[in-house]
Length: 366
Image (cartoon, rainbow, N blue to C red; front, side, top):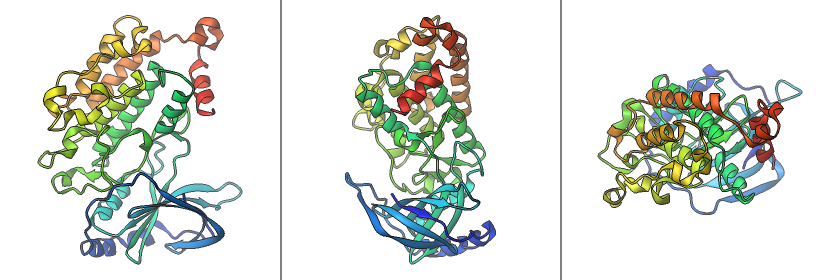
């Protein structure tokens, strides 16, 4: 992790965008194969503060996390005082993949709490350095691990799981329709749980691509075979927004049941060597989740129907668009809202409104 403190006032957005043409020209001369993160990352703390400059702004380096072809860091802008703004620094090799990365970040909306925004960038010595908004909170992977360590079989209740993934689906609607971007690598470690006000924040666009360039896209950082849709790994497949839908479905299934779908194979069940064995064998959440079984009325059946469609190994059998998927989640969530009763509420009806947020803060806070 690279932590820095700004010393000077940042340049205007206009100054930084003038470097796009230079990035385009240089990256075409420096195309590399996609890289993958090794099992161990090298991290070191800088004993005496060093500084770096990004578009004329000086930052103090506190800690460095090194990855192949990428460095990550935390930036703190002390202006305006007394409370500064925290950003993330992304330092990547200048190449065609990083040009794709930069273009996707430039398309993201400004001041949208569930998505990071690009604030500044420059190109120095063959490295592209980008400063984006930092989403504060715990990532979903750590959260699930923490709940597991507490001895809970179910990572999260049905109401909370669907609330968070419903919000993510709506975020991806904006991503697909307005920004024209496919994320391509939605997984728990790329999801931040920032607060009750913002249910979910989607980060790490290193594997994302522009919808109009799907056939000529670069793999970027690579995708997780357990969470990514099978077609992402098929060279001849045209990948669209239904790939992100599949990933959200895998995460929702995991949050409801405590395990990955398709006998813990996730997206790997749809790879060419496995598809014949796993096609049509998705487990029922009712069989794996006590929380789902205890839901009233027809909710368990509706959840299973939604899961079966979103997690189809064949893209054409999923919801046609992310909007259709989000609408289906809205319907389930609306019914859950009208029927949800927690253990705390049974013991004390006065807890009815606050039971879920209080439970969430207690688990996240350790």
